[in-house]
Length: 327
Image: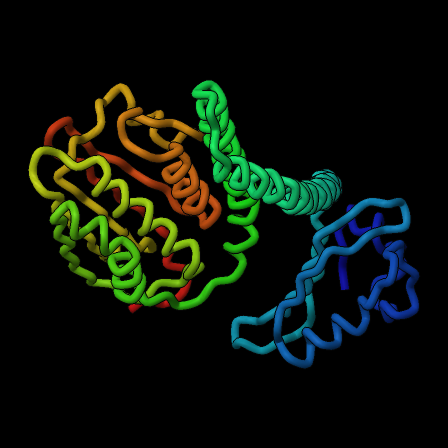
């Protein structure tokens, strides 16, 4: 019926083609289904939008929509072409880089798992040999001292290898999501820390407005275990009081763990999530728990906020994307 000058880049139209069947006119579109798409729009009254490539290597966003009259009747179809060549090139380059990064990540994951497994095997042999040496009577005090140093070094080495494997596995675990029972996770953590809770006379209180959230069950337990364990380890003068709560906040579920412990100096709050970042060398641990916690939360698309005051305790607020309906 009519066309704009720019259309001739895709369809070989001339003024003399007005009134001719479009099926009789050639196009510059690769793998084109133009006539079938137009017929579908005319018959169904729907809109079709797709990316098409022309013979000269350019890309267009093609849209076919019904031409509707004032009386709401469909009298034809309107076809538009929007040049998206630069956007398509950027997208293809991004896809290429993403595939490359995925291959690199897969290779790194494979290397870490293989290396950690291969390192633990000879380490077990060393530990066995040292245990035999420990059982032997040592007359030289210096030998006892050396054995103690070796024992400690082997234990630290095993911990390091295990930590590396754990860090590498977190993001792959995040692909396995399920509706996790938060109350069940808390009960399991309390049971696991039973001896420490009893020894410290700790009290754990909970207020769960949201009890089920879409997450990795294993990783949510790791988060909860680290935060509750830290609340006990970094206790103040009074027995630990730990408050765990969940609530809905827009598109997020907020998981809060608050304690009445020794608190964190403001200057060190930003450092507590660093790998091996420890605020106190007098408390047992390797300084990897909070690093893993933030890595898990980041991998899930969430974030952590911390409020703390020395002598009054610490409050961790974890914002997780709800994603699926929560309950």
